[in-house]
Length: 168
Figure 1: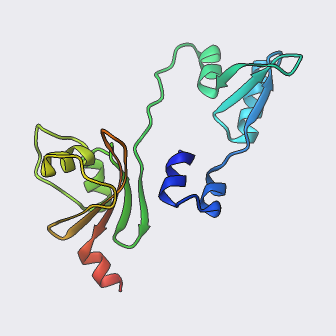
Figure 2 (figure 1 turned 135 degrees about the horizontal axis):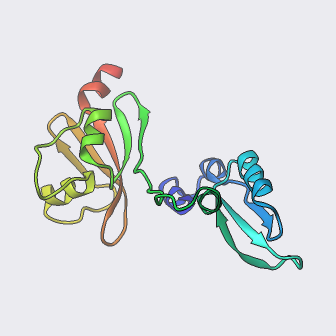
Figure 3 (figure 1 turned 60 degrees about the horizontal axis):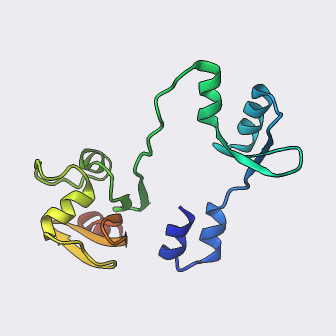
C-alpha cells in the first residue's frame, strides 16, 4: 500500500510516485463492454462509478464485471510478495508461506505445526512480537523487521549472508 511505502521510505517522493496509479472513473450508464475496455486500457482493477450529476455512486471492480459476464467466480486472494532487492537480499511480506520463501530465496526452517508463514516462524522463534528494525541472525541468514503493526509482522528484509559476502 502507499501508506506502507510512505513509512518504509520516510515519504520519499520518488518511491511514492511510483506506487500511485491514476484512478479510473466510469459513468453508471456505461455498458459492460465499454467498462471492460476502459479497465483494459487503464490497467486498473477498480473504478469509481459516478452518476449524471457527477456524484459518487460506488466502486466497481474488474472482478465484479467478469462475474456479470461469466457468473460467480472464486474470490481473488492477495498473494504475499517476495521481492528480490539485490543479490541475496529479498523483501518478504510477513504473510508469505515458508515453502514459497524457501523455493524463491533458499531460506529454510524446520517444519512445525506452530507456523506456516515467515511472520509465524519469527513469532515462534522469539516468543514475542519484534520491534521495527530488530535484526535476527539465524544460521547464514539475517532477518530485519521492516514493517510491523501492533499485532503482526508485515515485512521482513531477508539477507543471505553467504550470497551477500560473495556479491561484494
